[in-house]
Length: 247
Image 1 (cartoon, rainbow, N blue to C red):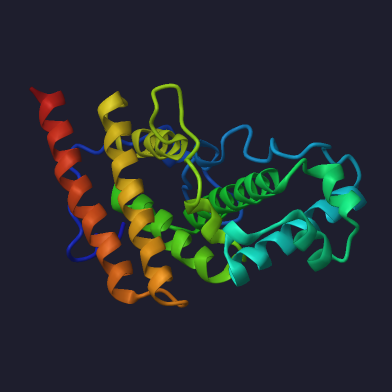
Image 2 (spheres, rainbow, N blue to C red):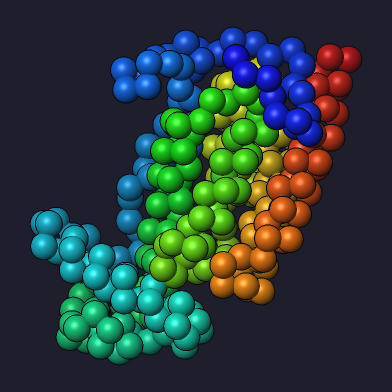
């Protein structure tokens, strides 16, 4: 195993988890359980009026969302209208209303797609990453978020609405990250962990959003600070959690 990179906080007491002995035929080595990130419902759409049942319908819906994403990038989500979506997609307004009752539903569906693609990209990146410590999980999440701001049209819409939350009010993605970290590194699964991860994700995503608000390519100072702040906060938080559990 490689030595952790300089400047990364060490995690003591690491146990060998079940996920670490699962082997991938493609990589020939242990991989994290990415289903903990994706979840069972990662492909579900909830904002569309009519669920597509055929490939052509799915392509038509994706074309409408692609058009909406371009409008968000060009004009901002506040100015998007269903008529704009129809014109940009080369579709009739009736086609738009077949899937969406109004502009809000368009934006919700675009956000759902962006979040789904983010989780899929995080899972793909996890498969390519040797997880030496919890900081690798955080690095992947932050790096993928920044990359999608650059490459995924309309991705800024993820910051324009309330995050999906779990029953305890913490972000759903914080729950999924917590499950992966618990599964991989033996940190106790408890509400405080999800609370801390929720704060960390909020901090990191806000800083990344700010980076791309300032510069189209992402202000490197804000991107660097996003990692530093999240790392420092979680290193202290995880240390406190371990001390509490050991007491």
